[in-house]
Image 1 (tube, helix red, strand yellow):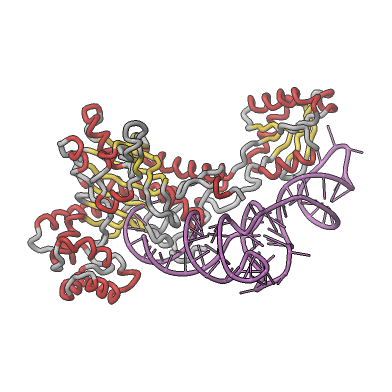
Image 2: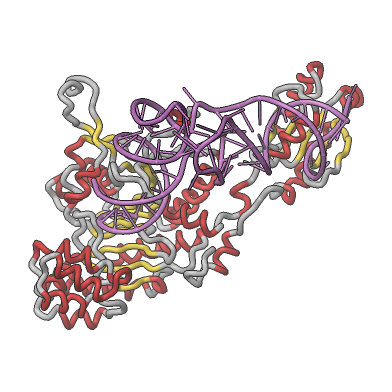
Length: 466
RNA sequence: GUGGGUGUAGCUCAGUGGUAGAGCGCCGGACUGUGGCUCCGGAAGUCGCGGGUUCGAACCCCGUCAUCCACCCCA
C-alpha cells in the first residue's frame, strides 16, 4: 500500500465531490443568511506577518499558531516571519485598522475561509478548517450582539437545527464573580477550567479539583454556590454588589436578552456565568453555541473593543460571531440533515459512444443537449453498451442517450431512463425536451438521507439521535 | 502534551508460532445495440515500517509512524 505517502498532511483533508457539495450547501446557506442581515463579504490572505498574530490569542493560542518559514534570508536561520491565519477576527481587525477611512461607519462583514491551528486532530477538530465569521465594527450598542445572535440562529434554523443553546456571558461578569468568591486573579483561569466541568464531574468533582488546584475550600464552596445550572441574572446581580464594572457587564447581558426577544435568537439564549472562551481579545459579552450531541461548541463569539486599537492605536468597538463549519458538518452528517438534492448526480444525461464512426455525432448531440440546458457527460471510449449503462447507473446519471448507426440514419436518438428502464427512440430535436420533462423526479434516483424539513421535525429532543 | 486501543486485498474485517482468508467492490464471461437480478471464472496484499526472539513470526518483544478514543484545549 502506498497510502502512507498519498495521505494528506496531518490534520488536513481532501474534499471529494460529495464532500464539496455538502460544504457548498452549508456555506451557501450561511452566506445567504448573513447577506440578509446586510453583511458584506471579505477575504484576507492565508498568510499574515507573524507579528500580526502573536500576542492576540493568549498563551495557549500563541503555541498553536502555524508558523511558516519565508524563503530567502531566513531560510538558514530557521527564523519564522510568516504564519497561517489562526482565526478570521484578527485579520479583520488588521483590515479595519488599515482601511478605516474607506469603510462604512458601521462595517458589517462576513468571511468564510480556512484557518489553521497546529493542534492535535480529533473528532470535529482539524489543523485546517473553515470558519464562517460575521462581525460588526464601530458600535458599542448591544443591538450588535442581538443581531449577531439572531443571524447565527437563523443560519442554524435554516440548516435544520432546532435544539441549540446560545450561551451568553460577559468577561467583566466572569472576573467579578470569581473575585467575589475570593479566588485571586492569577487563579481565575485554572478555576474556570474546573468549573467548566460541572456537568461532567458534578459538584463534588469540581470542588475536589478546585482545591487540588490551590483554591481554598471557602472560595471553592462560594464558587460552587454561584456557578450552578440555571442561575439567573438577578441572582448573579446579588453576588456582584458594589462591583461597578461587573454590574455594567451584567446589564449588557440583560439588554442582549431583552433585545433578543424580538428575534429568532430569543428562544435559544441561555445565561451561563461560567462561560469563559479561550481567546484573550474579548472584552465584553461572550457567546457560544451548544448542541446536545457534540462535546465542543458549534461556534462562538464576543465583543473585542480593544483589538483594532492594537493595530491602529485607536480603539474601535467591535463584536463578532464565528460558526465552525466542520462542527456543523459533523453533526449534520451524523443526523442525516442534508437535503436530498445535495447529493444530486453530476450529469442529467450520459451520451454513450456506440463506435468509432459515431463519435462526432455523439459530440454534436451532447452539444445540442447542453445548449438546451442539460448537464451532459460524454462517455469517452466506445466500450460495450452494457458497460456504459453500468457506468451511468453507478454515477447516478438518470438518462443515457444512444446514438448508433440506425439512429443516425433516421435522424433520431434513443433515450433510456436508467431509473425505470424505459427507452424511446425519437427525433433528435425532441430529445432534450423529453429529458427535461422527466428530469426532476428522476434526479433523486440515488438520493438518500432526510431533507432539512424532516430533520427539523425530529431533531428537537436531544439524546435521541441515532 | 498525557494515557489506552487499532494498523492484514480498493472497502469492512477474520486469522493468537507452521505455505495469506471471507464478504462487498472491481475485471471477464453466460447476455456479440443496453445497467440493476442470478450463475461461472479472474486479478489482487514484502500482513504500516524498522529491528529483535525463534528451525519458523500477520501472531511474541522493542522501537517508530499512522489512525481512533479518553484527558487537555478548542471551531
